[in-house]
Image 1 (cartoon, one colour):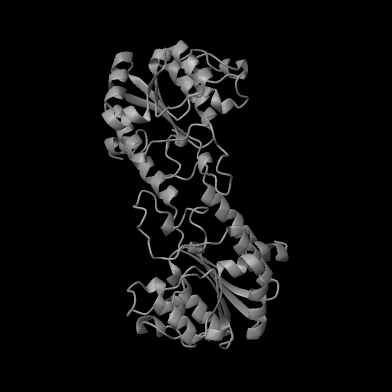
Image 2 (image 1 turned 90 degrees about the vertical axis):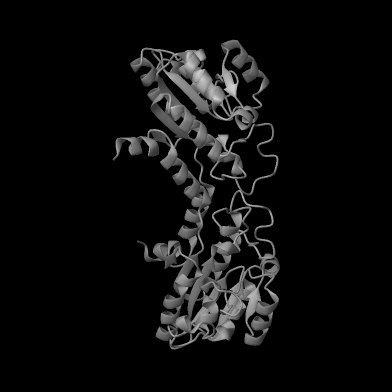
Length: 213
Length: 213
């Protein structure tokens, strides 16, 4: 179980798990974005981690993956509106997705069907918090306060509720042996703002400075 | 320094401070609401605490106030759109307010002028976090996710930014001896949601239940 950091935190643990389970690990990637870019598309490693796990992308990272995850053992949940390059790569690799609309209509059924189809016993779950609707859960990059309305234009934002995600993970864990869970991209704006404010208020921040302590 | 709880947390400490400083304590009430109701208007004690401090309101609380705060030693910051009853009571008591518009135009000047006019040396500051705009800071009652849009209709909501409040408290603390600071009404929805989710996910909540540990 991993909590915090960006999506990259799941690289080494998931690579280890797939090796441990002889390349038969199934991976549920609960995320608005596919995280399969390479340095040719985007220079942030956190957008590449699933690609790395399948043996693609930056060699600095893929060399940590001795046994790549099979694309047919990967399922996205909550992915929508990939870029054109991502959509092509998803087709090329044959990666499947249960998007927000399908999840809303059918619940967990497609996820359970996919897990059965893999023949896998062990499942690792990647949960990028940005899969949540930033109007309902605000501890996310996309809920940054005080920025122009078009700051994140053109980037897909989360559409799922916490209740939906809890349900699908609950259902799949009833049929799979969940051996890994990574929760990433927590960005608690309110906590950061409150902390900054406290260090600047009288009797707390300022007084401490005056005392030199 | 007090952090957390509802506005009522400031009653006993502020009453003590006014007694200690011989009834000459000045009080800056940074809040969207005046907190001067009595049981006749509203049955929640947190909406009465400033009234109690001035000797009004529920006897269960006013008996804790041996030396009431003088209304002329009180200044609101950020108050706006009081109810009709509150507006009348504010007039009756002669309570002054630097509302969001005035603060935006003149900065801290009116606050500094008021403090000088009181002749007080010691200042206690009440900071109700609901003075902040709930679209910019979400750890507030009024930023409750997943509720109908009209849930808080008719109740004044915060209009200040954190930067404004830090500035005014910084300025006033340069001329006043700040002896008390109470920060109230912190309601971290994201933290509560995340905590609930974690207890229900595989490898954390559910697995623990299965193990019976």
